[in-house]
Amino acid sequence: MSTVVLATGNQGKVKELSSLLAQHAIEIVPQSNFNVPEVPETGTTFVENAIIKARHASKITGLPAIADDSGLEVDALNGEPGVYSARYAGENATDEDNTNKLLNALSNLPAAKRSARFHCVLVYMEHANDPTPVICHGVWEGSIINEKLGQQGFGYDPIFWQEEHKMTSAQLPRDLKNTLSHRGKALALLVNALAEKHQAK
Image (cartoon, rainbow, N blue to C red; front, side):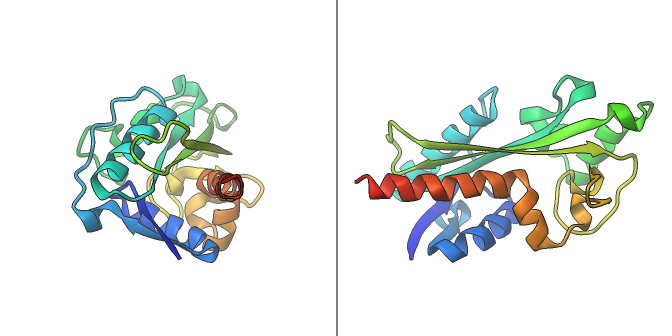
C-alpha cells in the first residue's frame, strides 16, 4: 500500500477519493493529518489551481501528492461559477449559500437553457519539483434544476440533474455516482496514467 497525500481539507472529497482509490492499493491521507495549511488558489484555471495545491502539499509532507480542483460550469452564466465554485457566494460561503446564489442567478431561465457540467482536474506529483505532473480531466454533463433534491453528495449535487436517470447527483447511489461523475472519470484516467508511469521506470 503506497501513501499519497490528498491536498484538500474538504472531507467530502477525501471520502469520495479514498473509496475510489482503495482498490488500487493507494492509501489517501488528507493533508490535515500533517497540519498542511491551505494555500491560496491564485490560478485562473482548474489545472493551475490543482498544480498549486499538489506542489504545496508535497513540499511540506515530502510525499507524493494528488490535488483536485473541480467546479461547475453553467453555460447561461458564461462558465460561472467555474474555478470560484467553492466560494461563489463569498470566501466563507457554505454549500447552501453557493447553491442558493446559483438558483437565484438562473431563476428566470427555462429548463432548455440550464445546461451545465462539472469539471474535475486531478494532478499527481511525485515530489514538489516534479517537472512532469500527471494531469487528468473529467467532465460530467447535466443541467441545473430549480429546487434541491437528495441528501447525498455535497456542493451543487442537489441541483445537478441527470436526465438519463431522472434524478439529481445527490439522489444517485454512491457506486453509480462514482462511475458517472467528473471525479470518477478523472480518477480512472489518473489510475491508468500512474500505472503507465510506474511501468516506464
